[in-house]
Image (cartoon, rainbow, N blue to C red; front, side):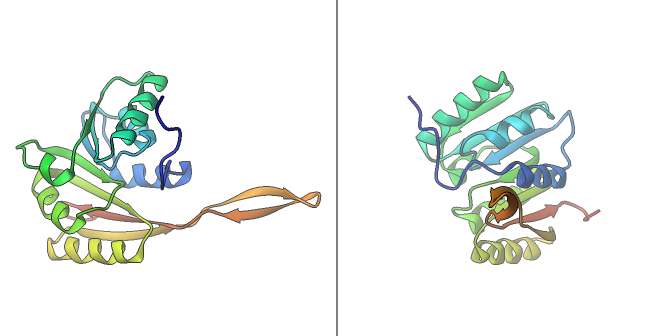
Length: 180
């Protein structure tokens, strides 16, 4: 039986909505997801695009993501348990890429810059990850923006409601020719 929860996931719906909007997905797209975790983002993207290639280095993540896709009835996702730098050695080209995992980001982004036609989105929670991604993407001439998203959800307390914050997420956006 696959694990039901992974560290760091699943991506909150509000964060996912902003990330997907920034990707600018099209029905004809082939999208690469690095660090697919629970598969929640993979499934959401697969509903909008031609195909999704979703990778994660953790076997338990691939097991859970595959289960998530099967339960959602989504069949246009190809899951692979592999390390991103090894996976990216192929000649494949993608329309967009979403990075939920940030291991080896400084090595991955320059390779993705050559393999992604339109948009790269990186979700990060650590300021060091934001700094590293922005630096690399600026050097590549692809950096557009960082959007910091802070979501709070209502909870009942003393006959009223309060808002309980969820950790902020930084959404880093890179595009080919220009940011528009």
